Amino acid sequence: RKPKFSTKPSQWEAEARRIMPERNFMYIHGSAGSESTYAANISAFERYRLRPWMLVQSTRRDLSVELFGHRYPSPLLVAPIGVQEIAHHEAEEATARACAAVGVPMILSTAATRSIEQVAQVNGDGDRWFQLYWPVPSAEEVTASLLARARASGYTVLVVTLDTFLLGWRPRDLDESYLPFAWGQGCQIAFSDPAFNAMYARLQAADTRSVGQKAAEIWEILKRPGSVAGAVGILANAGVMKRAQLYMKITASGAYREWSHLSSLRKYWDGPVVLKGIQTVEDAHRAIDYGVDGIVVSNHGGRQLDGAVASLDALAEIGADERVKSSGLTVLFDGGVRTGSDVLKAIALGAKAVLVGRPYVYGLAMGGEAGVKHVLSCLLADTDNSMANLGKRGLGEIGRGDLRVFERLAK
Ligand code: FNR
Image 1 (cartoon, rainbow, N blue to C red):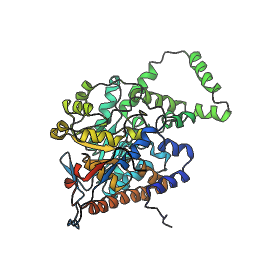
Image 2 (cartoon, helix red, strand yellow):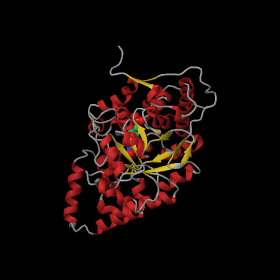
Image 3 (cartoon, rainbow, N blue to C red):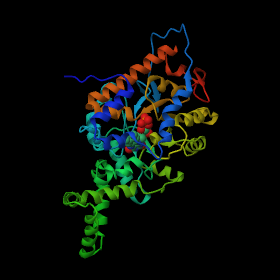
Image 4 (cartoon, helix red, strand yellow):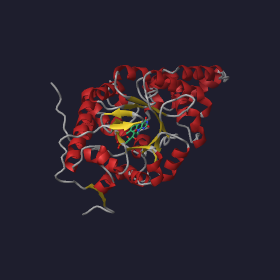
């Protein structure tokens, strides 16, 4: 029997919550600190309102958009989201198949639970981009290897995430001591990488601690789980956990990168480079100065700096800037997009295209490939319908004049 899926975004979330173990759901749904930035991301859309135009011939509509010289069928992309296996056992493979089926580009996360090659294979003729959690300078060969693999597997655009050199303070996960990566989940891409594995082997070989020292360390760890099952689990997974630690160390151990390092990426990547996590007009200018091709205005769905401005407000500032507008920098956006109107509001504020995050993962939890397809199809149809009701035939016709901004919400 085909499951019956709702067209309501709030139902996708409710259904995912019902199906998934609470801890898994909260890893996906939760965000940083008091979750005020997450809430602001969502509520900001209420303050920007569309101004519809009547008696416009919009029976024929074109949702397509050109990004970096390539025409895409719609302004919708799937945001990079790691560890999708915690939502559904088919994980990123289900997402990749769904994306190819509905014509939405998939941005694969470095923290995926499937390899670069596995995802490419099932994504087939689909458009795919690769998101990089940029390793530390001393692991340069890992960066080179990941990008070479992505290039060879048909990923066309590189998205470098700048806001997660250190994981945000996420109380829900902290209280549950839940970090999928620590157990090796979301490390599939690193673990299948020859340069990463060579680095790990070198470090192992250089480990000069005595057997006695190592045994003492294991004893310290074993004292912590407080149960035989926990101890057995830790011992069985010790190798994986050590490799996972190395992965965390080289990708999420602090602010080890600066603007001047960006040029080094061009050695390993000859396609477009997009910086994800830009939130100020000053940083957008820096992106222009350093010659990148695009930015994603994003605060990581509120999961990094709690208290940061709503992503849509950041877009309003960046999208209105004269230098940004005349520079040719491609501005993309994510954070809180749940409906077709949300997509159009972001376009009106200067985004060329938008990334959708949590909703498609809720779709994945609901029904694997079919669930992701359902969510993306709803968003596409809603965007098309809303464009017609706004009185527009194409994205190029949508601009600032189609919005009215309210300082506060009407009671
Ligand atoms: C993310 N995001 C993210 N971003 C990234 O660059 N690499 C990643 O691996 C992840 N992983 C990830 C996991 C989960 C569970 C979530 C919810 C988010 C951030 C993501 O790409 C995007 O910026 C936000 O999800 C957008 O906000 P919405 O649409 O979820 O509100």
